[in-house]
Each structure stands twice: as structure tokens, then as C-alpha cells.
Image 1: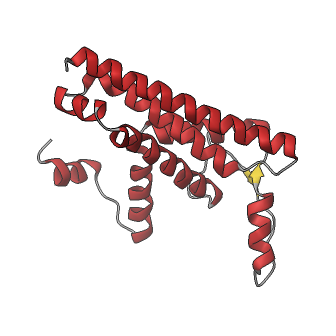
Image 2 (image 1 turned 90 degrees about the vertical axis):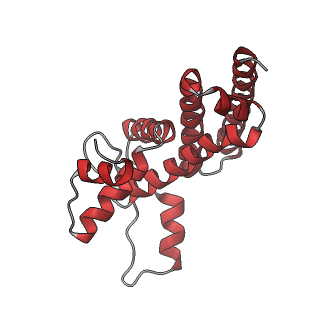
Image 3 (image 1 turned 135 degrees about the vertical axis):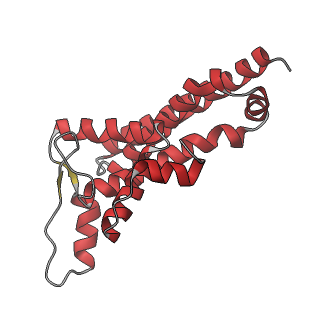
Amino acid sequence: MSREENLLKVTRRLILMTGTALLAISLLFAATLWGGYRFMVSWACFGCGLIGGFISIQQRLKDVSDTDLALLANSWFQISLVPIYGAVFALILYVGFLGQIVTGPLFPQFYIPAFHKPPNTDDLIGFFRETYPQSGADVAKLLFWCLIAGFSERLIPQIINQTASGASGKKQDSRAVARKRHGPI
């Protein structure tokens, strides 16, 4: 197949998969609204990360080698791998927000119910049922950052590395880390 045919095939698959993901997310939200169920923030994060991953792979298609493009054109699994990683990274970011590992004015704030001393099972159930962004702006920030986490496959690993370095008391020079991974800069 020619490069143009492979691009068209991959783009069609991405459109189909993105549309399916958007439909599934919309149905989930509709079910929570119409059914009177609690809105599942984690599913919204997962969905935004998934969509971010689809956007990312579509944006990078023009720079993909012919070999990689042929692989994408012939494998649904390869196309879905980046968006799935994006969805998982969005959930990791959500946990980082809840744990106040990632904080600042650009990031969402959450209402988290108080735990008893000592904590009990009801505290955990309450945590999952009653933890929500504090305001509409915080919901928007959360969804935005989850989309970014899905779009930028390096963002969450960088946050994890920085957090791990900070926890161990080691501050690593980013150029030294890059030299270790990729050779001289």
C-alpha cells in the first residue's frame, strides 16, 4: 500500500475509534444524569485521557515513518495503544491531584470528606462517593489536564520521575538524565 492509502486507513480507524469513545463517554454521562447516579469523575478522567491520546496519534501521523505507518494501518491494537496509555496516565494524574502531589493555581482543587481516626471502610467508601472538584472551574481544569495527560505521553512519566527524585532527596540535572538515556546532548 502507498503512504497515502495507509494514512487514509489509519485516519479512518482513528475517527471510528474516537467516535466510539466519545459515544461511550456520552452514554455514560447520560446514564448518570438520567438515572440519578453519582457522576464518576474517574471515568471522565479516563475518557479525556483517551481522547487526548487519539488527538496525539493523529497529530503525529505526518511524521511517522512508512514502516510505522504500515504497522498502524494493519493493526487495531497498535492504534489503540497510545490512547489507552493516555487514559491510564490521566487516571494517574487524577490520583496525583487527589493526593496533592500535583498542586498549584493551574490545577484543580477537590472536596475530600474527612476520615475518622483511625480510618475505616466507610471512610474509603465516602472518599470514592463524595470526592469531587470544588467548583465548575475545577472540573474544567481537571478535564483539561486529563486531556493533556493523554496527549503528552511524556508528561506523567516526568511528574513521576520528579516526584520519585524529590522523595529520595536526590535532585537530578535534567541534562544528566538525558545523557544517561540518549547519549551526549
